[in-house]
Length: 236
Image 1: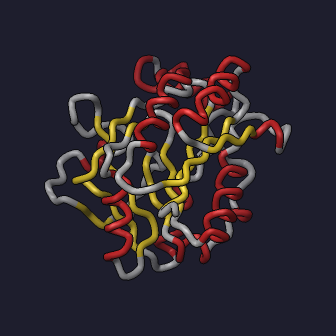
Image 2: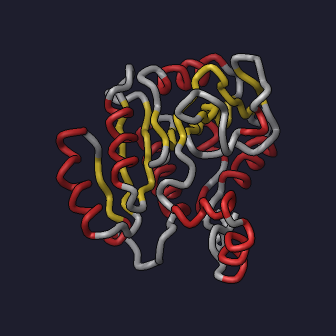
């Protein structure tokens, strides 16, 4: 029986997505992994279908549920929250540009069990050399194995406790936004939950692999902010 519901929203970037799925399948604990295909190309869709039995994940095509254009993170979170509550499981988001280690999920679940009122528990992100990278550069100098924080967690690899999932209904998320990391992190704190970052359970993160235009934030910030504000992309 699965110990956790793991979800991965996907928009193309098939190579990194398959790396993510294979890593989750190799975990030391049993996870029910659901990939949400958010209007990827037909080629990506076909490969996801081809590989699902081999790797072992459930595949949901967002196009079968809505005609709202990608990104559909709100819908993914709503569907996942409902299922996690029904199955009485914690919910773990592992994004398609992240590769976990075999014991990453086990460490997250162990931390969940030890805390009195856990809200969100995130794994710190690192590059291929093991150096802390975006979006957790703010914790780069931390030496402790884990820290409690009031600062925003990223959903790169983040566990939602069952109690938090039952305390805040994701149907209330703002329709005008694309991403909810900051809002949900603050909501957990507001409701009296504890947010934690595990520095001793790092995950390999290839930032924005599924949305290459966001790399412009580092290579051409003027163009990035033009696209962000004038086209209304990447609303947080």
